[in-house]
Amino acid sequence: MGRLEGKTAVITGAAQGIGSLMAKAMADEGAKVLVTDVQDTASAVQAITDAGGTALGMKVDVTSNDDLKAMVETARTELGGLDIMVNNASIFATIKPRPFFEISDDEFDLIMRVNARGVHQVMRAIVPTMIKAGGGKVVNIASGTFYYGPPGLSHYTASKGAVIALTRCHARELGDMNIQVNAIAPGLTESAGVRANDGFDMARGPTVATRSIKREMLPEDLLGTLLYLASSDSNFVTGQTLNVDGGKVNI
Image (cartoon, rainbow, N blue to C red):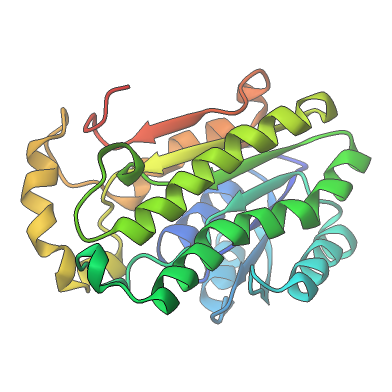
């Protein structure tokens, strides 16, 4: 408890599922949390406040510069700053896996715009505030799919490969400003959204079989790595992507 005491964290895509759980984990460690999403954040905020934490919620589209400007201003004026940014907003659980030659241009562009360009836009919005404050932490949520290229998810895999690339580039550019930028690459995680999508049913057995730790991955499995990267424990770590997948990918 208390690893993030006195810090303000902002997380995108946190109305439900993994993002909501991450928001609460940071609040449990003492951070004031701004919970953002294109969907209603009320239940995620309530879970934090019911546990004695401090949280606000707001509607934010990561592809809207106006929304992002308002997000930064709210964090600064209502919660005291912006010390930690978690780029979690992404389209995944609703994707229907299909061969790449059946993916329309519009679908490809949507995935890239939200999953990849959204990270670029968020970073552009938050960096002036972090620099003025003397530093900060950024945690991007990537994906282990980048390392093994699963069939049926080429557009998603490309978008998360871009997140890893942006993590490396942003870390280089921001290192002298005391801003550490890292990423987490989860394996197939049994969130409520993923469980509800029968398009992933055929992947579950083979995924578990290729892990060193042979069980399904739960959202809670990401929290330890998140808190490490968001806290002072990782002050000399930047530009890295940490695989949290039970040992499916060894690099």
